[in-house]
Image (cartoon, rainbow, N blue to C red; front, side):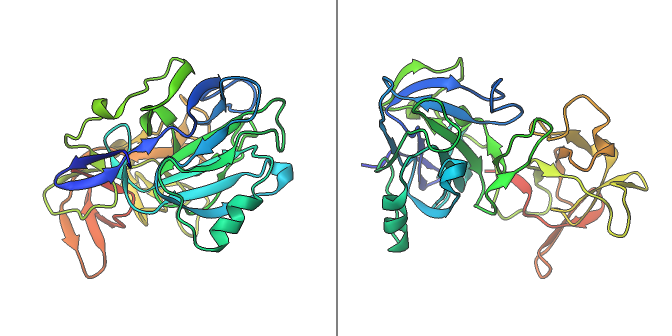
Length: 297
């Protein structure tokens, strides 16, 4: 039976941790290969090879070469509930399975992997010194495999978040949780949360997910007339109305608005108007694309 939770009359699958034994050997921002990214290296109960399990109902999206660890990517079949209570699609990357031909054979037949279905294994494919599963999870639909390299030369899953904000640990034996804030299903709040992929209404509160800044079209500068250009929004937002995002790729605590590798969050504000015909909303006096914006649901 799927592990689910109901919110506002709708039932969503929760994201389950992808192994039955949690033994984290390298966590977020690890010193070896996780510098500046959200990623876990998970070993099982011993040094052998143990299976991985689907966090939710999911479909295969893409895979990389054996030299690159047989990195394989999946997307949830529908919006799911994250451990932080938010609702969104989920994207996953797993690396180091020694053989993914069986997964690809099923994917070629259109197979949907069910929540907690055994589908892969930990291993040593690519650059790995011992059997483990490299795991990353992101909010949102699959759009591309990697972001990066960051200033440490590390690539990561696009829009990745800390796995303890995503996965619940029901049915998991925790040997080493890396000091992270793991929750069981019963601890996941279903109160109002910031949620993406919702229809925004005039007068309601909104803020953005982490978004990268960019140069204004036809220029080499991210700043013009006191506004920072955000390509995902299709417009500029006043510099005083954005905050540097926690997953910024240019290094924190610097002059981030001068660097187009930086990521920001548009601070909480009010939706001033909605243009359904153009699929635009107005915030801070400018029309923007609503996709990166969230509402309280």
